[in-house]
Image (cartoon, rainbow, N blue to C red; front, top):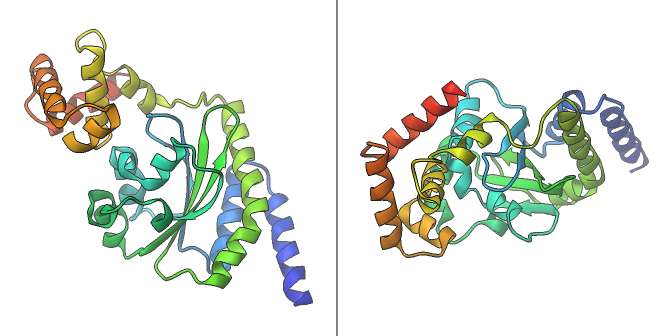
Length: 255
């Protein structure tokens, strides 16, 4: 036991000895992977309705388009961790199952970013940051997390939290304002052409919402969402959600 504690202490010291930001995040990810607590580690910062900021990941290039690109392109709107960051959920370690609503396992996010990749379980640390952002350190693992793994992760929280907060401080110091270019474009998309409500519906559609989930988010009926959707399509001279996405991509390119 003494030897295990000594190694644990050395590992923590090695992580914290790295410069804040990417080097420290890399050391943290390597440590968690050596402990067998994660196959892949991802760090996102969630701020309001904007697409999450992708701060770090340990993914091989072949997985990055699925777990970062597609996620930020709109699937994040269905992610239980993103929803939790926008609610009053306390900081801490959570499993995907603790946060997911009924039927999540049948949805597009699970199919494309979890089941398809054989990553059956996901755990995540939620950490409040300076300002209005919240960090999620997502740990993806193909196997079941037993009691010992959860205990180890709980013990790692005093290391995880300062590493994430330090990385956020570095990002802001280097010029990040918490709303990246994608978020800024999505926030102003449709202004001057669409009504405020139509802009809200357009943003939700770009985030990957259906008529049903958009109606729940806006507290209006599905029929009203359909009317707004039809009107905004007409004003933008498009006929589908894919064409809406193409307009957004063009706006992003021009920015």
